[in-house]
Length: 415
Image (cartoon, rainbow, N blue to C red; front, side, top):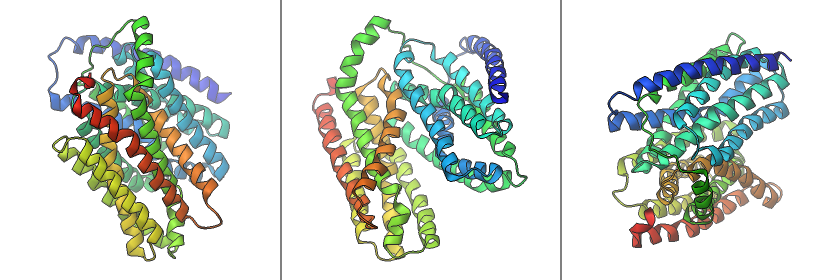
């Protein structure tokens, strides 16, 4: 009951703060347009905020476990509520993205994200915490992430924006990995959630530099074009993204067990994962630097080949060094491929309409990957997960590469 009353207060405060933000937007809209750099920086920062909770979830759930003592099943449901809220927000964005004022939606999402995080330490019961986190994701971070992905889809050279966003997201994970133990040392979630709320509040500053393309088609036109989008190249590109994430998740879910298969202890596997994940940042840096200098097909194909090599290395790994290199290769080419894969969706759909479905496609991929591998693994032979991953990467290439070739031969198709 206290959580429900608290949510009612959240909505009241959200309405008041949203009105203030909207009034400020009217003043800002009269100013000169921000520079391209500031606009790009605003997009990258807001995308980091939208994906923040999902990226730091291991530390966030660990903090909840330490403070409240919830068991694994309860933590799983809290995680599911957060991810489910974001996934539903992504699906609902199909309706509201081409119809509503995106600046107002960003304001509402930021307000809910701020107040939801401030309310989290007050929701000390299991059911109350699930309710607060679900609503925060559905109306806050999930909606924010969907909007920003749609905005990126309308911009030029989205690959560099996606690569920069991935770099910033990796940095945010590292920061929370270092700070979370310190912030919960007093036996409270307040330190963690106050930091998260402060970051979300910074989004209001970033928003004033955000440039959003005019996108107010009629409802009838939106309905007419949607069928062409979902069954055309953009829909296939989303399918390619989901297949890619099936491959990543099928390996990542069992990556520690693959270390055990190689004869490593859990501590040795953990050290290899730390080093290998750090190597992965190089992939995003290289994608940001490279941009479209080599086009889209060459970097993407190189990434798929690199991922297939990583799968082979997981299968053959028998030492710590081999296992660490396999983890590093997986992260390196995962982060290198992702900007080009997301950019291909933006390339095929300049309306940004289907970009809002990216969180839903990624959620589906990350859910299906472990399920498929888990069903096929016999006994303790976790190397099957790498075989499943390799098959998914080949399927992804079979979907995406022909589409990129079609666009290369027919540039008019980019419209």
